Image (cartoon, rainbow, N blue to C red; front, side, top):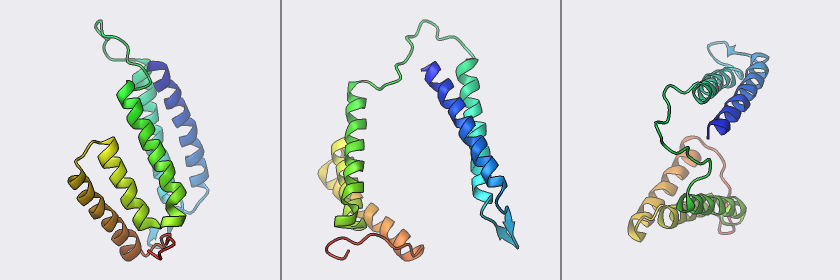
Length: 155
């Protein structure tokens, strides 16, 4: 796990440097509001700080493991199964978004994730999925006026 954190920290620092370099070429402010470079610049700075902290923590641990076994980079069997189920459900969500539309696809994804992956009961998963899909639709479609994919039924 230590080597993986070191590699991730270095990769994050390289990516952060690139983001900061590109963002510094954009306008930081436009009159009285943030410009196109404001968010990417701060995102790059935060990424650099967090990646540097990850690298330093992995390279110079504060205390020894005290006889504990080194953790594996991959999760245990049950965790790996849940991760793969999530990735399959998310891939299907992306593939079905154009055919079924945002509202139906987000509802089905949440339902599968909550009931199958997170082991919620059917009723609790159904109610939570309905609320989540409705909230996302209201947020993006109504509040932010982002056009969302409509499926074959027009929703």
